[in-house]
Image (cartoon, rainbow, N blue to C red; front, side, top):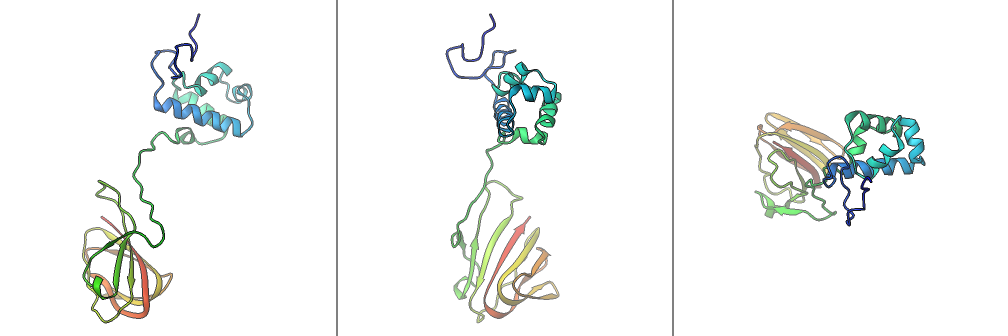
Length: 207
């Protein structure tokens, strides 16, 4: 008699061919196929008819007791009318992310910080040398000369409030809310004139 999933005295899904516990990928595909089938109101028999895959095979896919070939995955995706990639959602979930609530974020000390210039880093990713660095800059005092910065990579600036003249190399840009500037970070850049305080802009740098 063929041993069925669940007859082994545990609730671990196993590949029917190898007898080994189902891998994470098989479990993800099983969950996604079952999810899309049930949300679209298909029975296993209806999905079998739509895909040309046997009902028994669909059952094995949905219980993670078999590994799908690429052809089977494509037929399942076509029958469910979803991209093949949708069947892999959740397979790679260990990814770094940073969520920052409004008004939070770590303050960084730079030249001018004590003179009405605030730099609030909105998030960082661990161990990523190519990660973006978003910083919310708030300027409330025009009495101090704003420092110019230079760094590798690029920087994107989006004005949120106030008005200023922003310099990059030998060029000057009059900026107000809604304006943006994408620049090469190697060129000296920074506010030259603070025209309407308070000024706030989002600066996103990337190496």
